[in-house]
Image 1 (cartoon, rainbow, N blue to C red):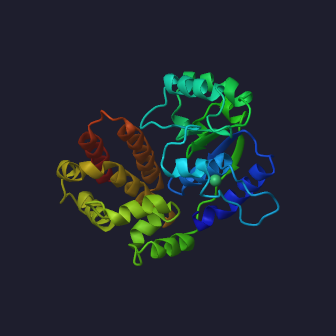
Image 2: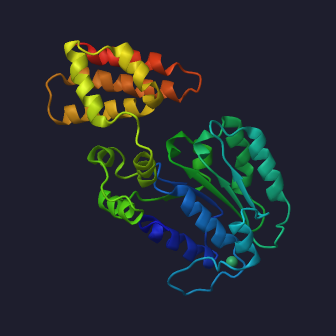
Image 3: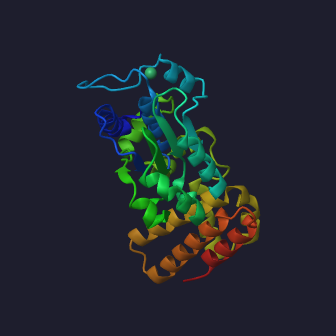
Length: 300
Ligand SMILES: [Zn+2]
């Protein structure tokens, strides 16, 4: 387990071994810190047939019982997972509840993991309420979310919330070094320094545009020697990254005590809106970028 999540996993495992783990957990934390990985480890521990008895310092699944072997092969019959790119629909929830209502195939625990639980629709969330409250015996529901504020209060109130820590930037650097990436770009570190799994993706496949290039072009936009439409066309594949970087740049300008704070905040607000728009799969990314770059080009 990642060093920054080790203590959290141990605490949860200790409680599971002592049969004092709540049956509905909301594992929440920043995107890219390894929420999925900790849920997988905890799920394996809950399902393991040879859970060590307490007290023991470093608790973990045995790795060789039938349950652990099935998990390693990726087809454990008592582990259910729901994930979706966009929204978790009510059918997926109903289907999972139906499966959970039967008895466990391996006569152990049953575990349901809901990835990105905040993407549940309102009817999905409502369909889950009763199971969250009174699950079948020896059943655990693990809701994972990097945006818990988007969950319905009725869901939140039925889960025990477990806040997972982000690594410090130094922990992040150490981890990347262990992964074989020693010299990580400063700008990337500043942007994703506490979301190591997001950061490593950027390190492995660097975006076609870098932060420095964006900052330079912002200067050209101001003096009218760069064309917003041309830049937007060039950067459209990286639209989400560009908007995120613009926000970072704006915040840096604000921190640096620039005088035109009102304009900067206004621009920041537009970036937030652009971010929302870009999440819509059908959106014209070039158009969103043109609009935002044009307004960046305007004098305060
Ligand atoms: Zn095992």
